[in-house]
Length: 300
Image 1 (cartoon, rainbow, N blue to C red):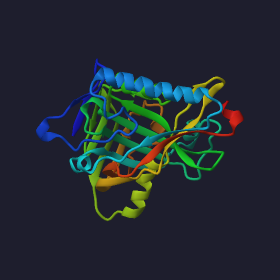
Image 2: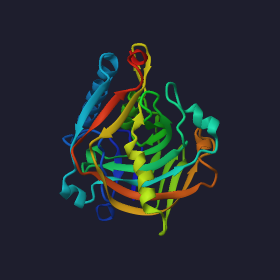
Image 3: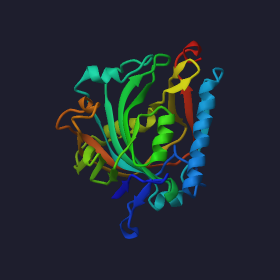
C-alpha cells in the first residue's frame, strides 16, 4: 500500500517503508526519467505545458506527436508499471452525465463511467504521484471515435495539480491519497471523498473484462485548452504503444463517493461492479498523440 499526503513542497511526498513497498508504477504522461529533484520536475513540467500551449495557439497544426519508449524489462521485473483499482459503472443520472459532455462531442451509444485510483511510478521517486479518475465516455463528431472526459481527478501535490489544470483537467489537491491492492481512497477536508474497494473473486468473464478495463487506457482523454478564439478541444491518446498487464486480480469493486460531490450522481448508490487491481507497463515503442477535434474552422 502507498499513502501520499499533501506536500508543502512541489513534489509528491510518498511514504513507503522499504520492506513494505508495493511494486512501483509507471507515469508515461509525467516528467522525464532524467528528473532527479523538485526543481527539475518543475522546470520539466513548465516545458511540457509550454509545448502544448504552442500547439494550441498554432491553428495550422492539427496534431502533435510525442514519442514514447517501452519500459525496460528489468524495471518491469522489479515491479515498475501503473497500478491501481479499476472499474466501470452505468450512470443512473443521464441528465447529469450529459452535462459533462461539451460541444462538439456527442453522447456515446452506451453511456459509461470509468473509475480508477492509481499510483504512477517509473522507479524514480522524484516523479512518483497518485491520481484518481472519474471519466465519462463521449463520442467525437468528426470520426466517431470514443474518448473519456474527466469529471474529477484528485491528486496529492501542487505541481501535479498545476500541470493538469494547465492542460484543462479538473484536478484538485487532496489531503491524503492511499493506493492499495484491496482498497484505495481519497481524503479531502478530513473525510473520505472517493474510494474503491476490491473483493477478489473467480469466475468472471476475463476476456470481456480485460477489453472493458483496457478501454480506460486505450480511448484517451479530452483535454480542452484555451486558444485565441476560446476552448480548443483536444483528444490525447496513445498510438502504437502496447500496455502489458503484468499483474491482474479480478473481482468486484465497491465504489463510493461523497454524496455532496458534484459528480456523485454518476455512480449508483451501493455500486458493486466487476473490476480489477492491475499493474500495466508499456512494452513497445509508440507515441502520444494530441489531436484537435472537429473541422479546422472549429479550432482556429
